[in-house]
Image (tube, rainbow, N blue to C red; front, top):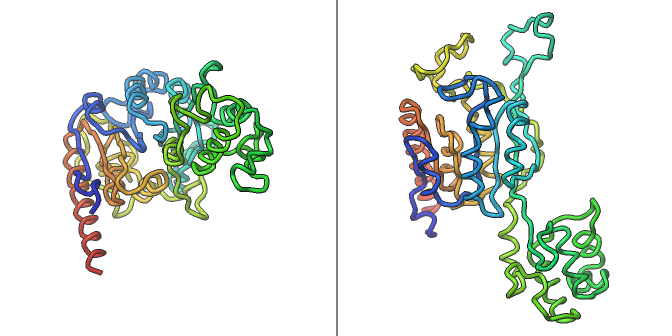
Length: 352
């Protein structure tokens, strides 16, 4: 049993998440499903114009807690996300890609009057993936991107670009992929950066300061470098369009709604506990994509805590907050069940 399994698999804060952030462990990923500007819950804004101020204290807290490898999944409407995007960028979040949830034609419910509304019916929702923008301080030349810094350090060593291939033990990939400044560039694995650093250290012109150093004292190691980039567990065949109808099946929680929430005019949602419950399958995809067992998942706006339930079920540790007492009770029950199921699976694997 590893150390992560000895820690509680989840922490549920019953109250305002702004009071909880400082006590939570640094997140590997944050899954945000907060205000949409559609009056979807008590405390949501009445339009997108107020979304930036609604999110500002949260985005500030996320920036303070994030590591260079932290990712963010931001759920919203298209216009809601577009409105908040500049705020996220200003706080160091860098766009990676957009996932579109295609809910299908049944989501329209036959209530669209094209002559009146004059737009295509909306059957989608988005979840946008962000990474932390990582800049490296290059001493006299100031902060620069990883792409620029890799080439800068090699040139500071006074080495020919093609010597990078010899350093990395490859035919031409190091020069063409790691040191190029065009669209062919991509982030090198830690072992390759460690090799570049060792070669530069041995053959470089100047020893004034270590080459490929993040702290100015020592060259970066492979493990240190790999910890700077967010995790990615690829699933072949899965694209950025996820198709599934809105939840109207057995997965959807039914029961008394929050009395302070706006009234619902869609009969199919009238008995739903939560108006915008996310499929557990989607939450599992997002958690699985950017974390490993034992990693920390934040869900600041828990609702029914679907992201946290997915995280606990996959062996991650969840930190979730929720204001509504009805949702708190359901979330706690779901989290407890997920923890018990994960524990049973581990025990069964150990006996097998």
